[in-house]
Image (cartoon, rainbow, N blue to C red; front, side, top):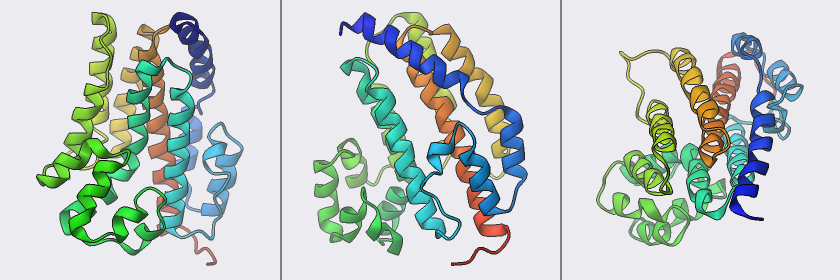
Length: 255
């Protein structure tokens, strides 16, 4: 399939996915809940149902997080494959965002958290001796972070620098869209939160219309696909937050 035909085909699919996202009323109801089984069932009946289909109320918090991370990676992989090869690295690199916090912890402390041993992406890295972790990182899909790890630099900033490096050369309008998406993402990356900054829901409320404008202005280009992924990331973060709050502070759930 020629690139132009593939992008047109992808646009039809991302437009449908964009239109199927939950309405704001759904999120407000979900975020107000504290009963984990009810939240999971509510989410299952929505367009984010695939994200919770493998969840059970009895899951530990770490297991719940692992399932959500895996689902997010699947979403990025699926959408990337709709687009020409030149755009896939930028889309696939977004898939690693949920792994940045545990990876940064491992880099900073050298201590593997017990639950990391079961993580399919970081388990081998966590189990390795400290001196061999850099070599393992450099041989895997997170290789662009290896130099930052070795030099004890911020992994989040290294992630962002590599993401920008994956952008293909584009026209000025599309480049402006990419820059806007990067600015929005910067507010949700690990380490970006500040005690004196706006709360999470306010960040989401500000980000949604900004990313939606990029989606509409770049329709028919792969930038629209990245804009959709950014919106889906916001959905992922909201779902994760609602489930985590219910899991930690809601009604007791049998183990």
